[in-house]
Length: 549
Image 1 (cartoon, helix red, strand yellow):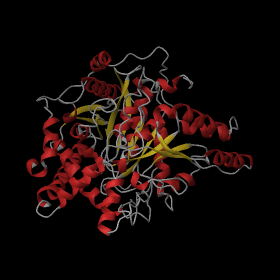
Image 2: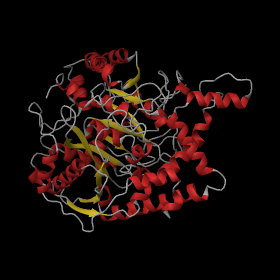
Image 3: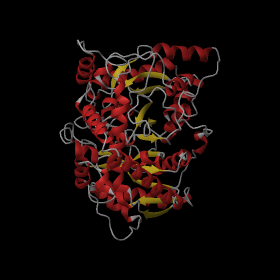
């Protein structure tokens, strides 16, 4: 079946990232931690082992107790943004109204008015999510200076919760890329090592949170665009279940795969942000009418590991994610994370997803096919910068040729080819059949386990330019994440350690996958995991000196 799914380029991708699976199940013991420690960078002497705390709850407490004013908090973040932005380049646009909005929060406090749950919290928004008061370009020259007439539903809910939108973050053009190098405007750098990429396509949002330029941020995830940058930048990233968050106002790439996701420096902050943007929306027929739980109630404080807070939890390690093609340092850290979950009381076993390797080629056929349709609206007439021409067909062609970047053009061509007469059944239809197989594989695995774990990416952050001229190698980096989108499931990525690289090591992310609409369980397990992880402080050296331990 695989050969009939792939076109030649995608078949090469599969061959180049072939995984060999061990014949016997692995056993996860505490010795894995020792093996991992030999692979990772030793914690820096100045690093604190204090577990992450909630920036959102800390800000709220300081405002309600009147220890600090909102304008002081916002000014601190804006100062850090100005200091670090020349090196990082996370933002395409920074709001001019942040201080005014902060002052409005302070006036509410003086009048003893009720504050929203995100009052005074600075939020970065990926630039493919519409904002009425700032440009929304999708990272593309074709939409340069475009200002929507409305807020995306997720943005409106943030504003209703009291959040301050600090600016629009950089991305790969229309979300097509894994490094943020295919942005039409600038290349974003990784705060842990500015010679490396932050991942993509939501690289700007991940880098902004990592560099503490904002408290939390929104990204979008079509095939891993929240989770892979979270791993590369050492922050928490959450991809919700398809339908949990409204897509209204999100520029469509692949409509059956796109979701709006969350970044934070802690699991708690990520859960609070998800709560704020979730819920049914009459403007999005695919949004779920399920009641949104109080994710904050899932979080419990854990002190000793010996208390076994995860007793009874069944964890499955996906065998296909720990084979050839994955860096040994990454494998060691995931094995160490599995051992840590065992120490916390969970039962860890190895599971196999037989359709796992089929997901990558199927994803790129489906996503490119949907993109070729969705991006047809950018023609210089309905949307997009117009190039003058004497004939209508020339106007269309010239406007798109000048407005779109190389990566977007390539994916449009791939998708148009897959949907063309005579090839639809061979490619698109077969890819949909593979999608069904992927969904069944996950259902079987999650019937036997509460959560599944894997790396979020097969390696740490690439050097800038390393993958730019080798798109197949870049696509192969999505192997760990695309299957989750095909199945429509939620997944949480949180940092679990470092491998050697840069001046202070490069972070590695652990991916936790749950059943549909089971974000609450993922957040609970992730919160316990990060509280009990010892010896790591995920603050990049670029900003560590200016932050309290």
